[in-house]
Length: 127
Image (cartoon, rainbow, N blue to C red):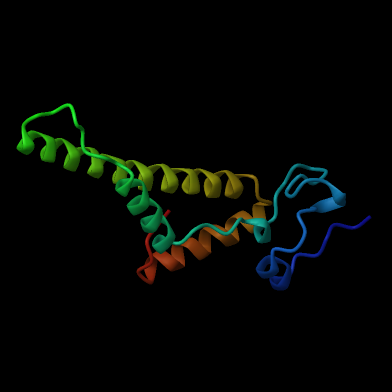
């Protein structure tokens, strides 16, 4: 059977997880992935919301008797939790994109690189 056609509608609708030849997505006979199978990642608003939610879960330590030290420690742990939540999510997204781009067909890889360079020239942030 022929590989499943990759259209904008299939990407936007997220319909079906089957890929080429009925196998897992991106696992074609030659192991190459397709550019249209690049997963959709969470935007900055969702990442910030998740980091804020994780930060709010941090409670002040009851072991410290000094109120100033307790407040300082709570602020440090809150900031650390916030930055850790953001950096882990961004690092995973970046690894996923780079791994996907590395497995692309050479033509699609060149197309993706040129597109990313054009976006950077226009002022978008780089990977």
